[in-house]
Amino acid sequence: MNTKSRILISLLLPLVLAAQRPWQQITVPAVREAAANFRTPPREYGAIHWAIWGDELSQARIVREFDQLVACGIYVVNLAPARGMTPKYFSPEHFALMRFAVEEARKRGMKVWLADEGSYPSGFAGGKISQEYPQLTMQGIVADTRVGVAPGQTISLPAPPDTLGALALTQPRTAPGAPPQEGTASVLPILAGQVKWTAPPEGRSEVVFVRHVFRSSPTRYINRADGTYSKDSLYALIDYLNPEATRAFLTTTHEVYQQLFGQEFGKTVLGFFGDEPDYTGFTPWTPKLLDTFRAQKGYDLQPYLPLFFAPKLTEEARRAKADYWDVWSGIFRESFYGVQAEWCAGHSLEYLVHLNHEELMLNLSRGEDLIRNEGDFFRDMRHVQIPGIDNLNQLGPATVNREDPTYSVNNNFPKLIFDSC
Image (cartoon, rainbow, N blue to C red; front, top):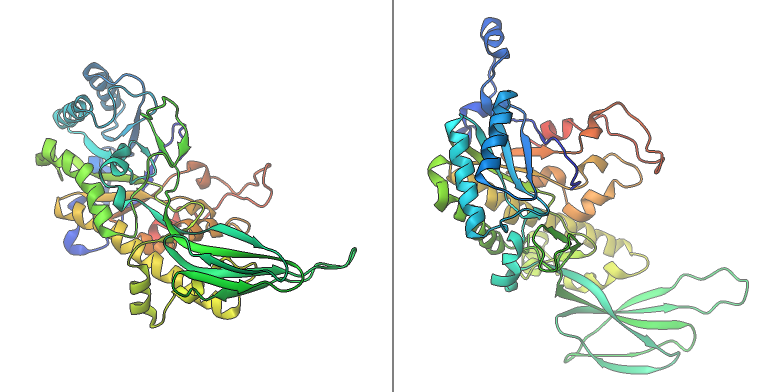
């Protein structure tokens, strides 16, 4: 998320007729009716002002800013904390101000969206997930343990904790000036917790252990303990693939707001806004992944996992990796987006979320970024009541970025909202 001022564009289409609010329904009014409402449409349809509340937040500031918005004809606001905001995010004083803001919005006939995080990405609850639910934090599959093996050496090594498989890599020795030869990769058996292997008599070899670990995508939090605004994994995200983790996130965020001003849900408060949930820099894992994979695909994924880290995938490994991506992105849809959308619908709210990298979907050089980090855009948006996009520059005429000639503005960017519904 770019911290500069931005306008969030949300284009609304119905997903499930039974769950629609009147302002979401597609209607075909008469010309006379449309003309009468053109100057002052229902406020739910208005542009959303992103209130990026940094620095000191007070009742006086809220009143002043809301009065300014109303004077400009803006009646929809997204309440979002920002760097330097005091009081501290999720403190009693902060919650008191949020309740005050909703009440002031109600008095003015304004509509409110609630940002669900203390910056971004959504899912770390201002550090509460790491503190209160460490067992539900994000996990990944990594190849972070590598052991070099001398030519002809026989090794016997204990597998590290949570090992999923082992891989032997050998790069043949080549004569000076000769082109490099393609290396070999083979999955090694693990028997009684040990890997035993003899390296070829020539070349460079290593044994790679593939395992699952707790690892989080970077988060940016406005009230870091060290006083900086760094983006790292100090405050871990939830395991997006575990519905219990998503429910823990709801407990620490949505349900607290429900206790404060739940009577305004579906009235003054339209819903919750989520921002850029994704996996960055590693392959997603969740404890039920292997069982879910077998149930959906009919075979065991584990023997193929080490091959995901080979220099070159075999056709069989490539098919297994494609199946894996299909499975984990489907879990992402149900366990993260689906659980939140269901909670919101059950509380007369909508779920509005913007993903990361959607503007790169049609980019030839970087189009895989969204697939790698978030799976399938349209699958992620399946249950979301209101898909969102940002990066307003993507709506302009096609241009070429001078710093990256392969990157051009996506003229089809607005269609992502329509196609996802």
